[in-house]
Length: 324
Ligand code: KDG
Image (cartoon, rainbow, N blue to C red; front, side, top):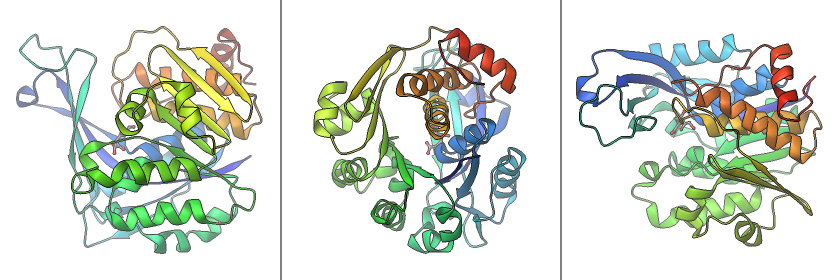
């Protein structure tokens, strides 16, 4: 089995009932954190995945590591910091109650409670401590969320892209979260562009790329970023365009009834990366990414729970992908 590692913050997620937050009396607890989500997709797809992170010595931290361990993710490199809390966020959801809300029925809003969290203290020391795990893997994945957590986390991700590759690929998902850049907003575009240029596999949402880099157009983004061997530009429900060396492939999105969107990008990245690590061609990687994203789009949590392998293979066959 191929091996991969992801690096980032995990969050306990409290999913509100649909409608204005002030009317939600109960919350469903679940798990989130873009890089952790990718790790759980990878382990469901016959990739051995580890997660490098920090959590607090609290119930949410134990819940998150337990959640990942139960899905086969190697959490041996996760550090417990007794001086800082585990991060959490509240997911406010649109629609449902029929009362006034500024969110559309399928949309939601993330309310972060993560300032000073355990994972915001991630630093280059964590990279050094996890050297054994990194040395054994074919791919390491992080996102613009990891980079945005703090200055020490930016140093970590910068060090990661500067490390000698030794055959390992670095994957980076832009995941632009403006709230996390408060206080460093004017540096965000420059820092993120450096990460895009320094990575081997890059995922950009067209809308976030428009905000950060000034264009949503896939070909213009490729012209701006010719460096990564693989660049994937996702245009939400419309299509995804993948560039791999000289190849350019565009695949339409699946048409489906969306329950809730958060986590779909992570599921896409996990599906694409698993297909890449299993040696699938570009078009199949893109189609498989969409299929995994569909699993996240049809539930209210951030984590994609994929069907069992034989059902997944049958679904993949429906979209022209061989997953056996
Ligand atoms: O991509 C989904 C993530 O955004 C979610 O799980 C929470 O990692 C998260 C973040 O920082 O927004």
